[in-house]
Length: 130
Length: 234
Image (cartoon, rainbow over all chains, first blue to last red; front, side):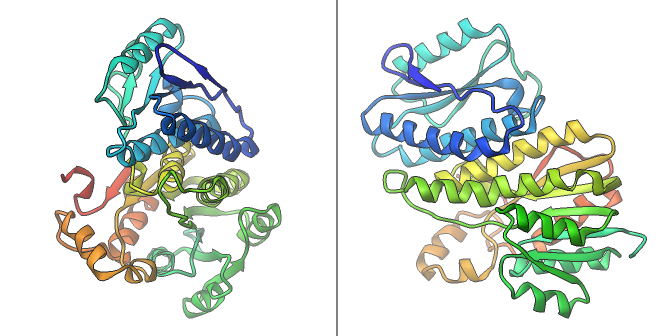
């Protein structure tokens, strides 16, 4: 589910849960615990999701997890202003692995980007992800 | 059974759920009110509606709703929800999980379980929150309410054109929970709302009724922020 990415960034990559409703709460809770642990250790966090799941173009359960992670990241971004946490979501489409890696590396260098959704590789252009 | 079909409202023992039920009953729906709190039976009796006391995080609870729902469900409003607020550094994993399970997964289970019961043109309305955009001390709640938007967005595409799925995202609403807040804290929060006041259950119920109605027949996969402008204010 997770691992060390570019630079000092802690990268969370929750995999697809398909249509398994029982997997939603464990997936989100585990992501919260791991993100918090990394942030408290002073590491920036990047949560990587599939762009199609943000718009609900696949499994509704995967969509719930992806957008749930986005909401969690936005909340952690607000809470992390004072302690200087940097936590973001990176979303890419199929074949966008290189663009995702570039975004993660950029987040590792940035001292000011937090609580944001970065969509790379042209994913979801012209679409709205509130 | 009415021509408008059955409308199911969860979390209906509270002020907002009850008001949503009233608006849907006024639109001609046969009302089925659901809550974990047995007080839902009194709420239902006062409106000539049926009630189910059920824990929707359990299969038996979903089964009880299915048993009472009938075969002509026109509207489902997923309104049940809880909060377990805490700074992220102090939030227990149990509290994180509990909010996800009640606010998000239970709504998903019921919505999916009812799939064979929806009539053509049925509407699902999920009660999200402005907090889906992030809120201090609400990592769990923000995740649950944002997840509900994503879930609905996907279902809207999967079930179109037979069933529409949308969400309403209120900000502060005048409920017993907000009335219990320290007045100075509440006043600071209201000061950040361009509309200059807290939302009322009617503010939200009217939007739910609209999204559930044929007037919104061309609206699906959307989230409507009913927050007095809070989502765009500084």
